[in-house]
Image (cartoon, rainbow, N blue to C red):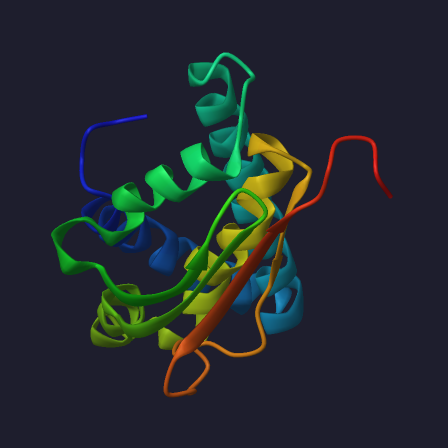
Length: 158
């Protein structure tokens, strides 16, 4: 992965994805265009998770996962309030999301959740499938904060 800050990388990606998405909507309709974008971004997030798991030598942990968040919060991209961080839990609220602000400024607020929010839990599938995300609301969808509740279950537990 590049050393470009994630917020900058997402803006650059959006500059390319936005016009492609608009063209897909014109040809295929909004529902199908959104489904294609959703699937593509999710696959990219899983691949990114696998990349970071490989960098960790496959020895992933919640502590290492928490450290990865420095990539997504760099340059003030996210302002977060950590509620709990231990080997099984990483709970925090996002109180400011510059990703949402960026997509809205670009006129892409309607698909911002597809380009960023759906990456958050999906990334875990590639990084460590024992880590899951529960999130009830996001700033991208109009809530006052995003609620991130990551859980890491023991290996081989259901």
